[in-house]
Amino acid sequence: MRITKQKKIIVSVLSKREDHPTATELYSEVKEIIPKISLGTVYRNLDILTKKGMIQVIDVAGKEKRYDPKKEKHYHFKCLSCGALEDIPVAIKPPEVDIHDAWFDGRVVEGFTLEMIGLCPICATKRGDSRDA
Image 1 (cartoon, one colour):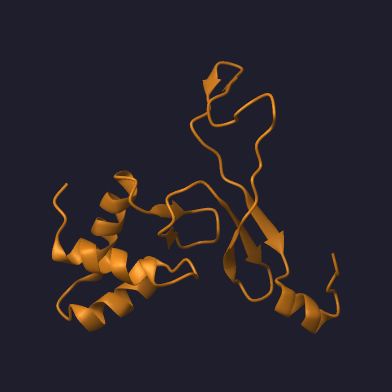
Image 2 (image 1 turned 120 degrees about the vertical axis):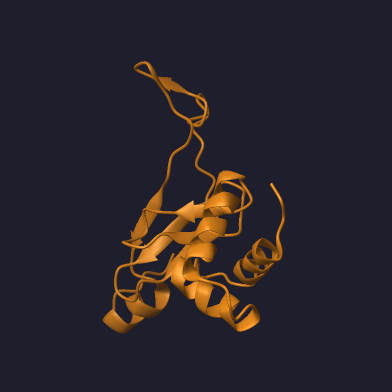
């Protein structure tokens, strides 16, 4: 894969964000740096970067795919009120079985997604539903 100027800038913009932006949101920022770039070019480059394992796509978080610069396995929490999507530093790994390598009923599991949903601390407090751990 050739690392083009567009790819470098897309990765750079994505790496500075922690909110898991959509392609459209990334396009808006990248367009400030490369005014002539098209939304289609951003989508194509995000697809290539995802396939090459340089970024992750989050497609369970809503209607539009979101992108994550973190390549390591991790999980997400989505607020049902404000829509915020954040990383959750949780290591879920059954002691006897690594689910990423397991066989289930003839199926080879190559990965899985885990998305937790609920209220973020700000929305929970607004609703009077915050829980102290």
